Structure formats: C-alpha cells, structure tokens
Length: 259
Ligand code: G1P
Image 1 (spheres, rainbow, N blue to C red):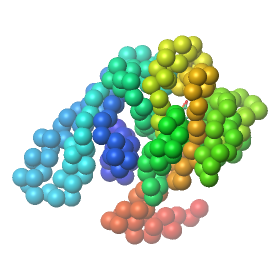
Image 2: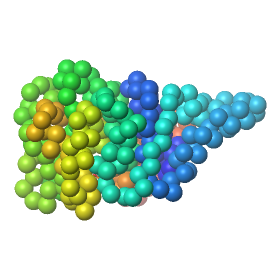
Image 3: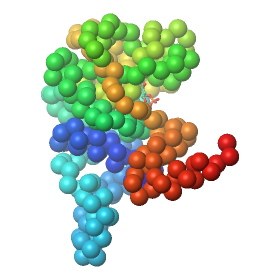
Image 4: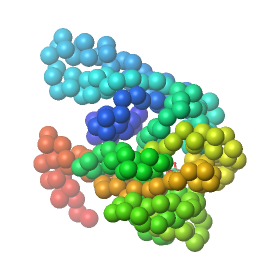
C-alpha cells in the first residue's frame, strides 16, 4: 500500500494486468493485510462522493481501481515463501494457465510486460518467465535461469537456481512476471523448503521442467525493485518525471541539487 507518486504500489500491477487484457484478479496477501482489501472495497463509496463533488481528476484515479473486472482475495496464513503463496491460489485458479505478478517489481514499458509475455505464450503454450540481464555480481539477488536462445527474445529453459551464492549459470534473472501452467501446483506440492527455509517458486519451476517445457522471455522495459529502498525512490522519480503536472517542477528541483 506504499504510495508511489500518487497511488498505492499494488495499483501499478493491477493496471498492468488490466492493460494486458486479464480479467480475473486474485490478490494473495499475508495475514493482517486488510488495508489492501479495503482499498478495493472502499473505492465504490469514494467514487459516489467524488462524483457528487465534481472532482473529476480524483474520480478518474479511483475508477481505475473499480472499473476493473473481478477481484478475489486469498490469504497466505503463514509466510512460507513465494511458492507457497502461489499454491494458496490453487483452488481459485483451477485447471488453466494463469499469470503471476510480484507486486514489488514495477515495470515501466511501452507495451506492458505481461502483454509481452502473453504474446510469447501464444506461440509456446508453455510456462514462461520474464527475464532481464543483470550484472553477474548481483545474481545472488535473483532466480537465475540457464537457457538456450530459440527466438529473438525467447529462451528455452534447461535449469534454474534461486539466488545462487556463487557461479550463477548465466546473467539472465527472473523478474516478477510469470505465466504458469496448472502443472505448477503439483510441482509446488512436492517442493521442499529451499532458500531461506521457504517454498520457492523457482524450485517448483525446476521440478516442472521434468515434465513440461518452460520458456523465458527477455521483455523490454525498465524494472524497479520497489521492495528495496533505493529501487523505490528510483521508481518514484522516474514515474513522477512522466507526469505532466509534476515533471517541470521536479526537473527544476533535481537540476538544482548540488550532487
Ligand atoms: C523473487 C523470486 C526470484 C526473483 C525475484 C524478482 O525473489 O524468488 O526468483 O528473481 O523475486 O524480483 P524476492 O525478491 O521476492 O526475494
């Protein structure tokens, strides 16, 4: 719920999903995160109030939340890892491919990152992960893939390692956008706790590789890790510089900083 420029972080992910023509959203939160649920619920009442008061700009912002199709909420009672969080949505997802967004990865791109992945998925019909090249010395912060290039931006994955301490198999890092086939749920159920004692999605995808092809797609766009202090500030500045009502004053301020 941290505000990035003028809306909560989660809103950016929801807007990316919407712009990628996804219609059903499942939000998985930890226990005690009712603020997120309230954010979506309260939008309706707020909309009425803003309509009455004729506050058009604010109304538009709020409508971006509520115009969206279907929200369902799932709770991850214990913080047992990303893989476990995805498993919490098993019943709600059912037996079909689905998209996963990690809310703290903010991607600024011309074509929404998930839309790019969906384009590639239409060709592969297999699970597909968003990847980006990172400096090897930062590989320990990511899931890293080993893959063979099979298209312009497409790789066929042969191995994955979650946050390798040394000798990463490549500099291709997983970024928080995935399209997964329902086979991932069986793989997750069989995955033992890994890095940090958590059930890792990367480990389950490695297991999925035994039975299905998995691809990775080098998307176009700038990614910010909003879960990190510096990343959050960088995202804030970059996105604010794109807002017509803010950018002039912000540029003037930034130029004036004696760095
Ligand atoms: C998660 C994934 C990791 C991925 C990263 C991208 O890690 O486990 O494979 O590279 O997101 O942001 P986290 O950053 O949540 O620890």
